[in-house]
Length: 341
Image 1 (cartoon, helix red, strand yellow):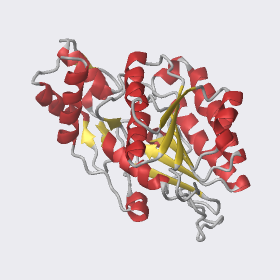
Image 2: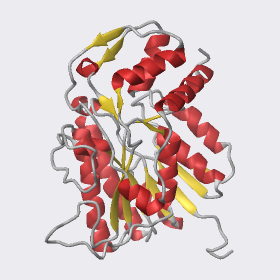
Image 3: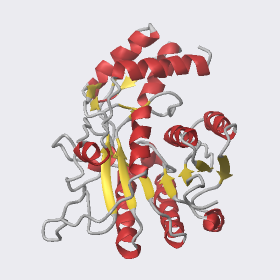
């Protein structure tokens, strides 16, 4: 079978995670052969990760690899047969946990990512797409946040590690010609979501009759982005390897592009929603009112996020469009079904 006839071979790291699971399922549906790497760590409920993974394993074309990005030898062996595309979604997530266990972020998000870059380099991978985060915008207040902005003022260690991923990726693009595309996600939610995220925490607490913690006294806005929109953006970007920008000028550098095959994109809903509005929609979908405990802004948090997605629109012809009312209703339906509430 020629390379034109065979299925595209894709590595998805973090495949038992929220975004990784949904992306792997979509790629399988499109006929790709997917290797799903995950270490199934215990940062949150492992049974939820196992349930996601079981659904993937049941599909033809999927191969599970229980592996940590810190395992250089194991990672090298995994790359022996090569990949057409690598999508790195494995990371130690969470802003607040980075205040408690910073070493976990260094091990996974910096050391692990460097190991992955080395494997991509030596295996001559055609394109690396990797998860960055809206957290990199840190202390910036000018919105909407754009990849044209310089992001040198992170306010959490998590954000600093994601910024470092972008810097490492650029270096590999420059030195070795590895096409890399960094994707800054904005507050992703939906079915099979992460239990440490606000929407999941709120739904669980409301259904159990417990109060919810509302930080910054509710004066927060988030560019809530539904999971299907995130996946659509990733799929389209994955099929468009980063290329050098011929207009890039070192005298007036554009942070979002480069003379190397390197690109950055935001994927956000492009319409920030007040936190209190999200809670109201969630209450409506659950049919219950929340008892709210108003608290100050937490260290590492930012009051508002808002994505500029002009580059995404222009380059791949896509923009997220799922309204918060639709996305929350789908999440609640899944939550009730999965947890039999």
